[in-house]
Image (tube, rainbow, N blue to C red; front, side, top):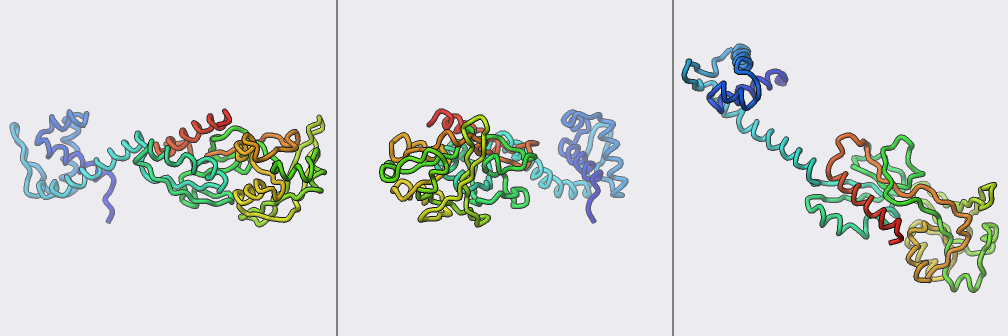
Length: 309
């Protein structure tokens, strides 16, 4: 039969009394009155129907039964104290396994370039990265946190932004545009080789959505049609760099290529900013130190991205 919680409390009181061989010293340590301890011990002896301590006005000793009980209790209580202490330390110092669910693009952008630095800062932390382009139920899947674009998250999700707002960028190589010309409106894309992306989770083609730069803010949707379809963003980017065609991709992922002249951006006025990537967690309550450390690190990297680094 399971032990009643009230009995566990009385056993703990007994162990403290027996260890000190003194009601007064045990009462001082536990910050309770001597009378309260005496009452707990009396109640325990009555429930067990056995005498645990021999008491006189000047001395105290364990009975045989009391000694046998203490021999069993002491290691168990010590193990519990160690476990509680370790939990408290872990709350203060990041440690343990973080199971992080991320889209592939978020992992490539936010985790992979900085993984070594994060783990060197927090040597007691281990990271298990689970890549999934569909939105994951992190609680049901046993994850500690997830990384997704803000627009894909439920409004009730506990999430913090870890990148600035971002835009989609339509880009191609200088050689491609030199041969085919620069599109000035989304309608012009019908005459270009638009390389498409197929979502792994749904199997659908990502349609290119634009917002007119005028006051009306009309939405224009283009179905990309070209010589290739990809379900990996890195392969799609490499094709654009080779001059195969035009792609629509996150601006922060092509920033360096644009700065170095390997890609040219077009239709920028038609691309409005939207919420960037967020780290989302099951709850803010009692956030483990390891998750707080990851959150703080990603927010720090957000500052670097915001400066164009």
